[in-house]
Image 1: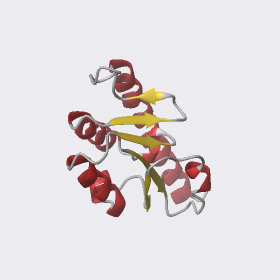
Image 2: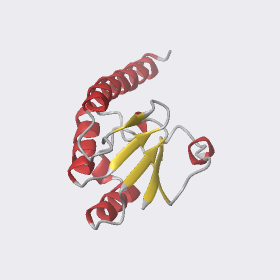
Image 3: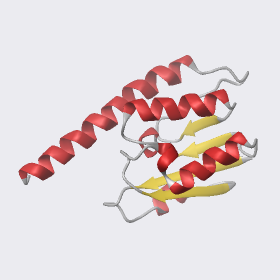
Length: 133
């Protein structure tokens, strides 16, 4: 079954952009991207459903919807990869698994870079808020 995962931060209010033309069940959380994936209410439900074999594909709007902590994003993708669940990121055009079910090495590299950039962006915005910019 296909599923969609949507995350909005506590600062964002609108999820409609991420919900256009979605198939399957939608799991969504309103939580900071710095909260570990498995600690989010509906993300943990999605993970449990994947472990039960109910999910084989998860669509996200972009990789940063999985989180803004690079290590946690990589661990989340690793967990889903080990379960045989393909994560599709629409914005970046990535599939974490190849057609034969193997991990996509190009996607792994790009996710490493993109998740690190998302974490840097989060930290920069947080610093600017502290400085009143």
